Amino acid sequence: MQRYTVKEAAEYLGVHTDTIYTMVRQKEIPHFRIRRRIMFSKEAIDSWIREQEENNVEARDEQASYQPMTLSYY
Image (tube, rainbow, N blue to C red; front, side, top):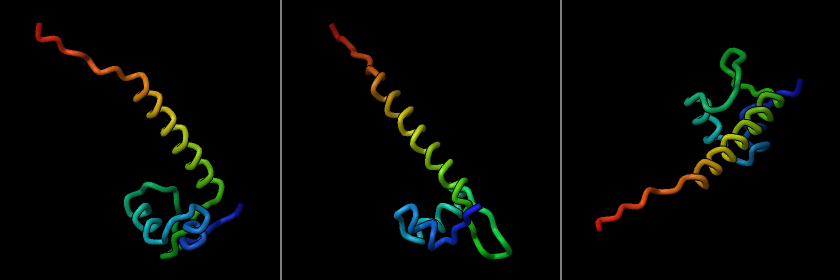
């Protein structure tokens, strides 16, 4: 199993380390701790990315199918 540190996870995802720390604090990204060190499993991160992609596709499809109600005053 491949594991990442915060810095490695940030590089892998293409974001700043501060973003990773924020996501960990808000429990938005799968992680685990070894004492005080925050670690990430590559498999869990890849699975999480797939979930994010699927959620974005579903949200886009819902928006595309949404048709606002038109009101007629006459």
